[in-house]
Image (cartoon, rainbow, N blue to C red; front, side, top):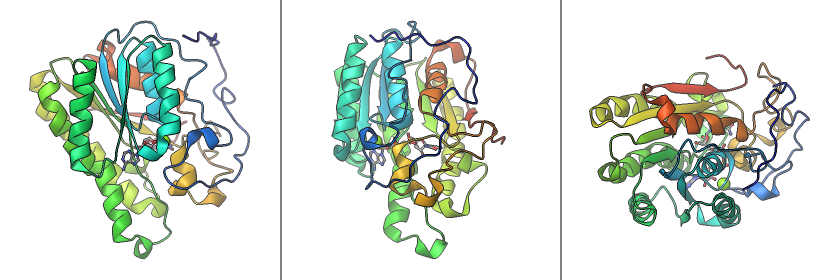
Length: 298
Ligand code: NAD
Ligand code: MG
């Protein structure tokens, strides 16, 4: 397992990439390996210390970006990890599999489309069968398409964005529930867009508002079972989602510069919170949303 030394103190202003991002565009869903620069998911830096020893995690969107950072960190903390992703993302997913295995843990690849309810069910069933159980559900996959006006949002877009971001959470949790024992943790992925919605992300922002409420209500339902539910609300993070339609291309160079830390975050900077929420360290934390947004106060 890589064990590159992480400095124990670093300046958050320049701890990660600070230059303008080169304007770039890929077809959805985008391949992270082909981005410039390639997002930092902690491949060279995340060092675990057994905080999730022998846990069994399913991470949706685990091939790239924030989900990949969580998947790598989970494995290095001692968990076996299954990842869901779109079939077109096989290249990125294979890298994650290798990284999980290098950490000495089991990796299960589960390609498919979350807009298909049957896939959501099969993904959970296969993950649980192959891992020998399930106790961490990190629901990270998401779809974001920028459009200037409400009349430009096609029914197809509306359907895809709401199905991927919201419906799939219902279907996945419904399938997972019979497998989850007391102590299990569900982590959803919200956004700063739930609190400070942008006009050009109208439909996406609406889904993230829904995820915020979904997570709190689900936490209430599952608390009596000893299952915690929390959500992570990232700000601007450098990932594939941004360069395959999530942002208008002319917004890419300055992406994240309006945060207090004057730069976009990297997925690696989210790994810690996904680990914390999955681990026993957060045993008294449920129905909460955690922001990681460079100081874009909400
Ligand atoms: P990403 O593109 O690297 O990851 C998103 C993943 O979602 C993809 O890799 C893909 O595997 C998965 N996905 C999308 N549609 C799918 C579908 N129909 N079926 C199966 N899988 C599908 O981008 P990311 O930024 O790491 O996104 C992760 C999460 O973080 C998303 O929920 C996103 O909304 C959220 N988020 C991102 C930012 C940001 O600035 N990057 C900010 C706030 C919230
Ligand atoms: Mg991807």
